Length: 73
Image 1 (cartoon, one colour):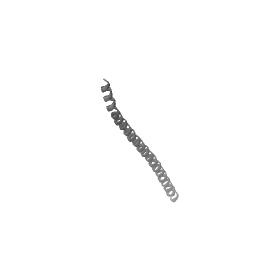
Image 2 (tube, rainbow, N blue to C red):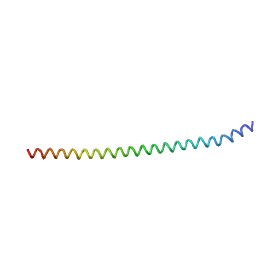
Image 3 (cartoon, rainbow, N blue to C red):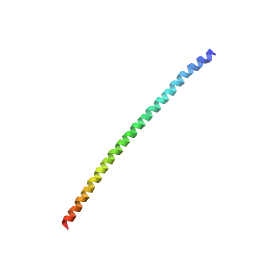
């Protein structure tokens, strides 16, 4: 019985190390994915702000063009 317990303990240590290493690698991969998703969302938000500003400027240009047309008539 003591021999069986010793064998189980000897083989369980490397197995636990392998499983722990696997979980650590998974955690690192998830962390990297979350960082990438955050960067993507930041870029999307920045793009949205730039597009909104561009549309605002185009609208102002259109309004100025309409005002010039009205003055000419």
